[in-house]
Image (tube, rainbow over all chains, first blue to last red):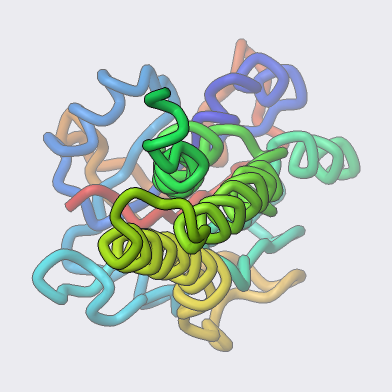
Amino acid sequence: MRGIEKSLDKFNEVGIRPVAISVDAPDVSRDLAQSAGYTFPLLSDQNTEVIRRYDLVHAGAGEKGHDIARPAEFLLDSTGTVRWINLTENYWVRARPEQVLEVSKLLK
Amino acid sequence: MVLRRINWPLWVGLLLTLAAFMSYFFVFVWFPFTRDFPWANLVLFLIAGVLLFMGLRRGFASDRPHPTRSKIVTVLVSAFSFLVFAMFVFTIFVVGRWLPASKGAPQVGQRAPDFTLPDTTNKQVSLNELLTTPINGKAPRGVLLVFYRGYW
């Protein structure tokens, strides 16, 4: 997410809006956005309703064993159709912004 | 001479082992180049390993002032360092892969499931809004949804 923030100008240029979703409460996300300097939207899915709908629940992986989201990225075109997915197999390996920007340029 | 009495390769090896472990989570994780594969940390562990090996040989040398004590300390420090290394490998290469398969996640070509969620100011935001609200006065070309574990 730090990488996305650093490349935000490029995302704006290409016309892609990054949006991050987690189980964090809005005020936790606000603190994160302030401390990390994130200016793109951070959305709050506290009861994992949307995370469940996307089948991204990592059961019991949160503090005190509650459910959280596994890391995942979806690039949607302007009709809301999925055009690119990254479901990392290893938590420490993440999609790079340059990768996403490259794919984004191919969207109509 | 102090350097002769202190088994410096052993202690430097131990410190470097700890640094090799911690530096991934506090430094190298911030750079994709050193995060996706922890080569920088593995290099540090390798150097630490060489130092610890030197320390082992030194600790078991016959001219030590306190042979038994020096052997015990050397073995304990080396074993602990190896444990730290094993824990690092386990955390990165084994625990890192403990992720759900997410077989039911939206596939390429499918419509992304709709949602409405609150943002950091508690304002409800829908996927449709995200897809249509202009960026710098132009209609967006798309949206990148990033799901993250969060800080709870």
